[in-house]
Image (cartoon, rainbow, N blue to C red):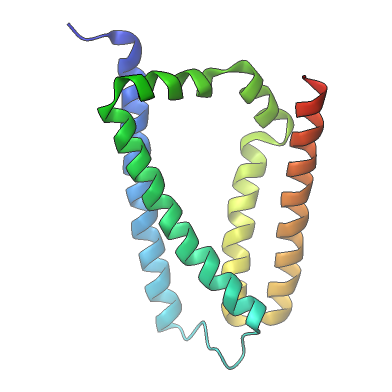
Length: 153
């Protein structure tokens, strides 16, 4: 007989894996579209834009593959699955995430990263502006997280 308390969490992990594979496919399509439209021309990109685009894209791709591997590892090990579920359901972690902006700021960060990555390949003025906004958003989220973390201790 299966333990039904972990069944829904296992489905959630399986869903994450499918979403992560969809992200990999989207990233590869993005790379092809950028290449076909002439983006990423090193003659117009500054060294910062070149470095950022390489690190953001290939680092993001590596991170997604790492998350797929980690999620598959969770499915094969019941102890790790229980521990991960306990961490995700921890009220303190949920409080810190919500107070530091929650899902709205997470989505905003993803969109800003995408905009900054795309602008780094086409327009340096737009790149520097979006890069500044991205750094400011990351800084504000980190400050809010640490302020609320200290207040809860």
